[in-house]
Image (cartoon, rainbow, N blue to C red; front, side, top):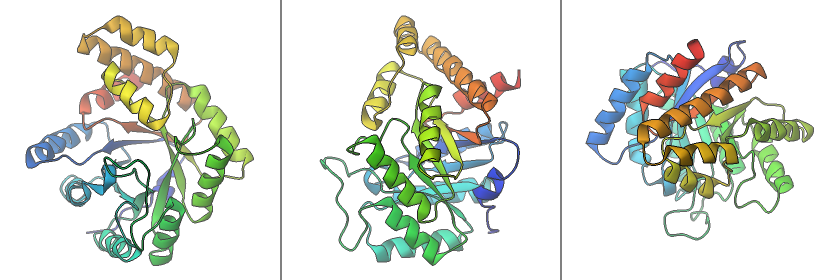
Length: 292
């Protein structure tokens, strides 16, 4: 397979990037549904797609399967995720070599969430405790890997302070990360403040906003509780007013995300990354709205 273009090269262009995130399904039926979503999204022409690694690394084989499908069959530039969860240094090196040999040149490099049922993250025997260690390993092993890392506009839930969180982010960038993709947020002022703080802290790489169009009030309340993001009162009131009408809820979520993206683009962001939960509808609706 030909090698992918590094996302850093794409970010160097003047046009803001559009990207979407997939998560690996649990079974073959889910893989087929994902294929149909990915085919539909060709209409939107995202600059690249990412594939998550699953909580606790539970979907690691599916990540490789889905990444290969998206790249080989559908021609996407794919950024697979890789986490430290449950892996020794030797295993991570072997995985990195496999990813490289398959022509992938972009990796979203993360520490990862603790396995289900675990109260806190614990490094595997011979493994890594922090994402910057994984960044260092990947860049030493294959210097032409383009590595993305995660940033938390409202602070990582485990960080003792926003200042400590920023220091950890700077470590990842200094280790060789080429860009940052943020955790989801619903108030653009939160993102702008985060970028200002990063720049003041010496972080100069592109910071791509990550956005999730709301599809369900309960679902988004669960997600925000997990990742430490806040729901603006105005958005919450609109979602509550929609009640149990899923089509109205989705319309509210798409309208809010559309407003966010328009404002972000006016402020010159390097692009935006959509957490679409393997559904094409919201991403295509946003693309159509932005084309209007």
